[in-house]
Length: 176
Ligand SMILES: NC(=O)N[C@H]1NC(=O)NC1=O
Image 1 (cartoon, rainbow, N blue to C red):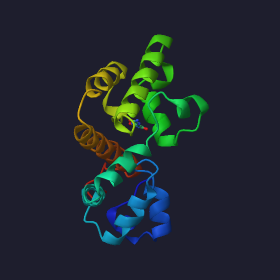
Image 2: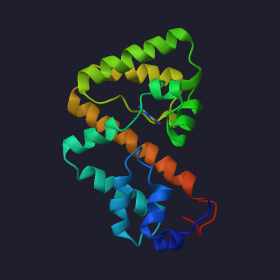
Image 3: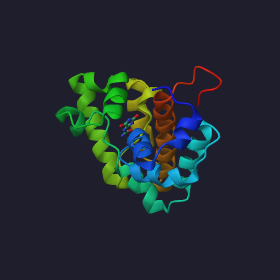
Image 4: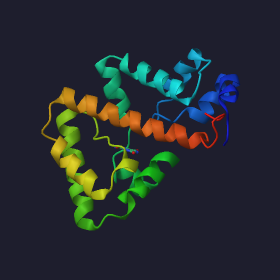
């Protein structure tokens, strides 16, 4: 895809949601909401609108966003039911090729984390490798719930930024 910002701003909401609906995993409601904020001056402005929408949510809403994320190396990966974006991100950080020791460690820590916080561990897989992810997962487990809620949301925003960038080319100054 190669869209300039004028093209994005001219999209009917059906197309806008179809194209950008999964920049926050399984949360097309966010994309549908920020469409009201057109016109965007550039891609960063769209990203900011998404970020501000998320920040304005009550804590339960932020936890809801985290709960829409599949586990890393979890059941959806095993059964092939990840979204395309998540599948590519997880494969990129080696989550689809864990040895059995790492796979069971991952599964155990993911369960422990979810049990403790009531939402899953979220990290931007494209900015981390397997070793990092495992380390972060074990280091973040003892944190306070409010700290982890905020950390998870920061990671959601990183994932969102990379997904947005993938949807538009930024190779020319006239492009997004
Ligand atoms: N749980 C979790 O972090 N999931 C994800 N992270 C990422 O980069 N893509 C995901 O689906």
